Image (cartoon, rainbow, N blue to C red; front, side, top):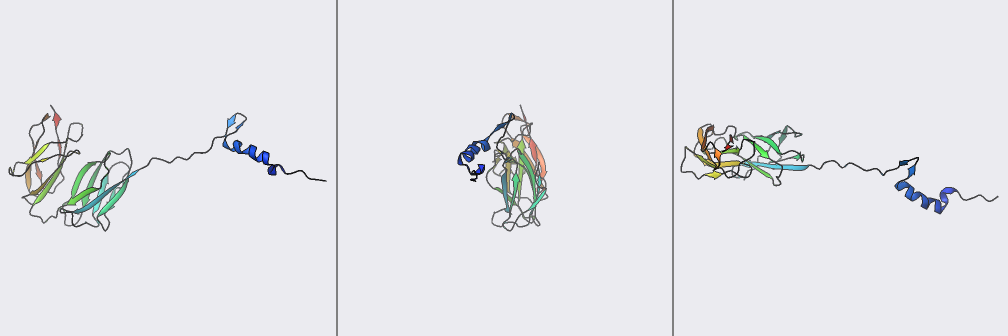
Length: 213
């Protein structure tokens, strides 16, 4: 007796099964192909730590971070570089960098639109001249660009303006770390005008707040 061809070898049957795999309504339930959640893509924040001239990379510097979902502590590699993932919803972080023989770096950074490598430079504690950085914000903690910053102690020093991040940097101040200076900030349309504050060189960078008139 001749056996019939098995059902799974019948070409028409196999062809008919192909669209069934894509989606079939059985007893009112539609089979839907599986999809995979790729999740949110994070970007990397990269920083490099060096001396004031940028010629010596500082290895093993301690990098302390404050911000949602960030590792609390990192250390720079042999090239003075550190790196961590940055979630897209994070807008600002606080970063502190410490290394033996150098003045600590302490700053809040706006990272929402940042793409380039953060260049962090530390000043040796033995320097006879000091550097000073700080941030100028409005009453809503938003950075103020273009504020004029000078030192009352040295009227002959060239003034500097705050960046888009509200940050100012004064270099080659003829005083030692641990000594005090008076910072003066002027910005049209904001008060106090001028704003003055006494700060200690080498301590936490000042965060200056101005309010709109």
